[in-house]
View (cartoon, rainbow, N blue to C red):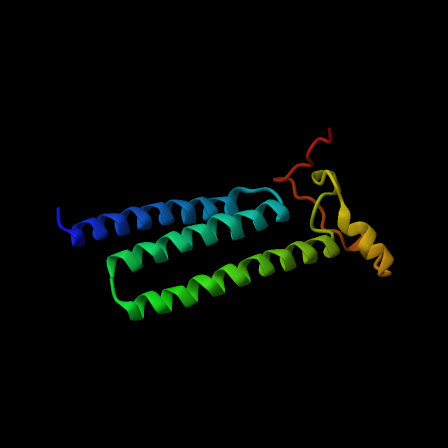
Length: 137
């Protein structure tokens, strides 16, 4: 087996692994019940899957220009995805699109209360018939 074939095989394995994680993240976005769980599915497996796909492309196309451009994409993805997930979580918290019983510890409530933010319950969306309330433990 030549070195080129080994690189192609490694690239193919990375591509398959990345596709698996991206599929898992996409299914999580569709299937998870609340905003906080969907936020997790949109950030962690999607970013890891994209990184694996980019590594697979890099091993398949062994050109320094390609590696440099993929490195820029990887760095930007790692820097922006956690920030976007954090902002989605804060917006969901402030808009009331989450269930207080889902959190074990609510560290943001004290910070927002100190900043003068009050929760407005009348803007809280109602639960549909297809999404019953979760029992609290």
